[in-house]
Length: 599
Image (cartoon, rainbow, N blue to C red; front, side):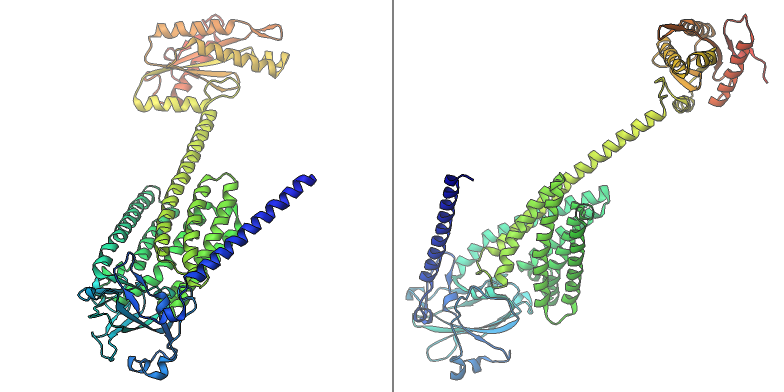
């Protein structure tokens, strides 16, 4: 590299590193600026009507109930009140199966809002159990009875008909009120609590419901598409695509809380099992579909073995999810397997795509989309990223879009398969034609003669068979060699084709023997005239290396149905007539089988 170019490259590297450092410092400064001080976090949250609801994450005081047995009366005692802490980053945390107590204070920003009904929303549909206590007035009395809901309880326990955990409450005046929430959950996103005006929240859910409806509609359409492919082609790959769509539909319905709301409204245990198993089953079917679409066993056997190992891990996770005491372990294993499997399949798609297997390119796009979206959710659940409200919708959209892309990839694969089958069929036809065609002369072979004769016999059509044998051909072969003999055969075959109609067939039976199938029921005089033309053509010399090679011809003629009703019978009759012609030195060179006496 020239010195000037090297200096320029170093300058650009320093500029890029400086820009990245500046952006990182700016992001850190912004993050620090939006973190409220401890005194602000402990102050009562002034609730008012806000777009998107009033966030409470930074105002939550948290107590980790390691014994899982604390009651409300116990946590309100001074010795437990002192153990409530403010988390450093409430929106970032690793999922864990635990019981948490939350404490926060609320007050009305405007006393005129006292008649309003408010909704405390927890962004989770599958928390095992949520208990809401309060609001407690400054004198300690509760304004309402406790509310208990969650994944372990029937749908009727959900306030405001909300798939997410919610709690309705009123504040009668502007003084501060204390709220306690007990959550038995594995999800870190329960920290992102918000206070809504009930009417505003119900109105805001319309967009989400429309998004869910579109997602379900697309998945149902893909189910029908997969079912049609399966019924038409019957391949295992379409079974796995169909099951992938079905399990994705179940997984999304579980994540949105619709399984508990509709099919399992009074059977929460079934909703819980479905919530745990559907993602694992979806991942298994998705992996099997990917293996077959990418043909990993052929393109990347080592990746295929890795996918098989992941399938085994997912199978163990699914069984453990049914009987194991710790569903979180199943969920974590499924999360890790999905991320790793997506990365492996992405690598497999790249390997297959490099070999110009075009369905792999589409598959690569679909997996990359899902990997980005699922990665955000998984990394947030592992505590690597902060939780954001739109992450679940992003994952849902990516999952649906992935299946759409997979459908296009399956169609692309189907096109390749059809093209391959068409090419194979064309090749088979070429082979069949080759078997029915004499390679030396280009006329039909004995097989071609039999096929045509069998067709006419099945159709009941009359026809005549002319059997031709060359006279003096052996002498040409012996004197001038086989090349000269081949030239004579090819030349005579061409003359025979030119002497008959397009509807007739010329065939070489082997050696110097030919046969003609003459369609219809020509008159004896017409057949005699045809035989005479053929004899005249055979009498013409064949030019070979400046020499005129001459041969003669003997012809036997048999007609269907007079002389036989099968090809073998007609050939035998024509053969007798031909040899009769050879024996008659003064004969015209052809004889009719009908003139011969039966053998």
